[in-house]
Image (cartoon, rainbow, N blue to C red):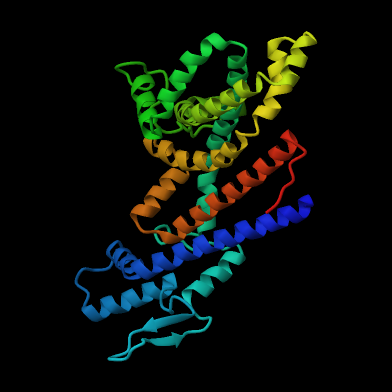
Length: 354
């Protein structure tokens, strides 16, 4: 199958799946929480507590109009008729919440936040300015450490068992335990206060770019280390097993017979074949980094997607949550396409098919 055709088909299938997931989340959230959203917004506003019931009802109607909740949810609805079986079907046409949301989504408009009364696109863009560098650095260092440590273990077999035992122990720990452990160990004045415990330490005064970069890396060192530490065990264990499986192969014996040192044999000949079983794990690396950033940003009080999503979930700010789900779907799509490209690089004989 031609690569362009395969790419178009994959994009179509993933887009269809993303649309189905987002549609389900949108309909379920609006179906179960419309009145709760209006009441929460009304209770959090500055209305006088002495207003009458009529004025309160009018204010709630204005809030429904403001949030787009004053029209039917979907193109049709099922209303149980009095004493009639089956229930009555009612057609509402295109003036409904779902049609309005889907139309705006196709235009790139993710809606307006209930809590901030601001465009969701702007809120997500502001949060990603902090989350993307953290996740990108974590993914880069995770891949680099995985590759180099796996190659090193290949020609230092006496270290395999201790290192693998340590990695298995780390793999059994959830991310929040690792993050809290590093926080208590390396950012605790009673133990080792080597790193800041929270925040980015932004200074209002202008400073050179290099100084800003150094301050940023200093403040995100523990969150970055937490993400890397929770990501590399599974990758290294799988890659090391693949390398060990390739070592008895004939092409390896041929390379050794020609006088190639063990490091060169592993790096030049074995790694490319050993990567094939590991590539599916890379599909989950970026989405796991995005999910993990939510945890570390909350623990280390960093601005970004973690704080935004936590506040959106606590206040039932569903437009923001839907926008975050869309971003995760896009990240997963990028990861899958990247994995397919790596498959083609590792073994050109592989033929892609949907």
